[in-house]
Length: 87
Image (cartoon, rainbow, N blue to C red):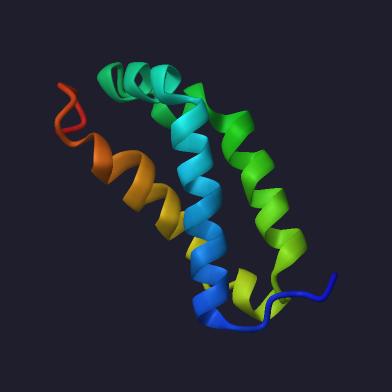
């Protein structure tokens, strides 16, 4: 399979991976937000997603942090309604 070379396609992939993480780990994410341990609570899942993203995009696109931005947008910002010491 060819590596993704388009920024738009890389963003879509990053958001799809982050969305899957959110969908399949909702309870862990909410608990992590509530206790301010989100990135510890799902560290393994985030790293597994990162490895998948890195394997699918060109090195130049990987360096642009699309995956990290998607994690923040989808896992953190979408949980703004959850009570947390983070905010």
